[in-house]
Image 1 (tube, rainbow, N blue to C red):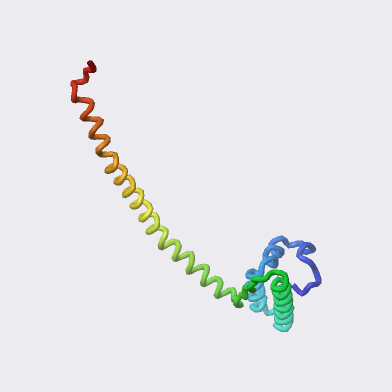
Image 2 (tube, helix red, strand yellow):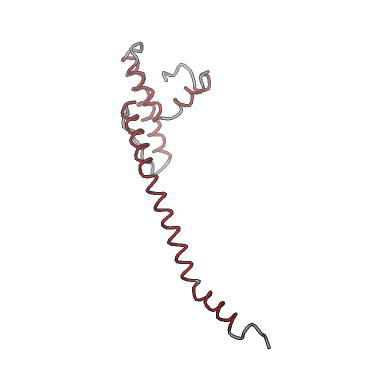
Length: 137
């Protein structure tokens, strides 16, 4: 992240994946802040470098693309990310059953509607079968 190695030169593929995206970089930096072996001055220096690089990239994009609007990420701590991910997972689990119920209810309603729409057709078929006693003259 300090620019001494490129992403391709890193041996750890998981670290390559993390450092490839801005959002995961922020979470990684948040985890680094919690590590007592890493100096906060190093982390702040890297954050400053990343911010400068992002500003430079935004200026380049704005110069070359007329309607470009930079997407500014808010700093995210690992604990905030974990809380958000956990609450999203809980909400998805709680509402999954309701969504299944709604889907089944809609399917039943559709089947009932189709049955009602074909009702006259079925009635005519049964009436036509028995009108002449089954004899074709």
